[in-house]
Length: 172
Image (cartoon, rainbow, N blue to C red; front, side, top):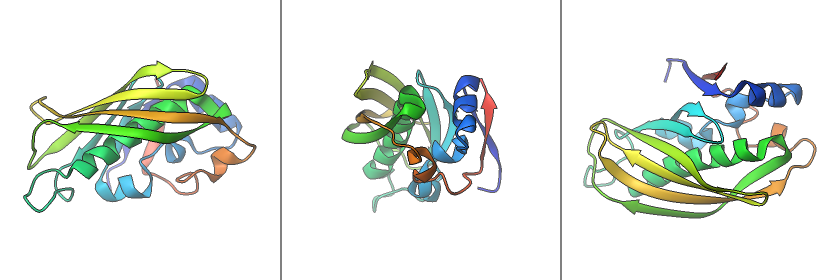
């Protein structure tokens, strides 16, 4: 957790949110829950969001990656993609999450990749594929977010906007 990672955001997004005085890495971080679970966002754009999460500390009683932990990773990545699609004019709110768990994982790191299925004016849907270190599919998820109009000050009041996430934005 002490190591600082660089999350890649498109430069136009960095500029847009910086002009509003918003800390982009904090706004698009994994939030408090994701931080506790060790979620790290490595790459973020409306077209693709990539993040990782350790299995250790996120297991159920049988020692396998908890399905709820996969859901947290999936919702984090899909929500970030939806927010980047909506840009500063919209706020993304998750309304449906579906997860299919394909195999158990006992150790290592899982990686999630979120790609858009639909990006409209009022909703965005992302498919999130979570794989293990051998690139075997662990979980397939689908997240739909409602995109509602942002009110002035929404972005600066969003969860995570008030604290540092340990990630530094870097242009694409």
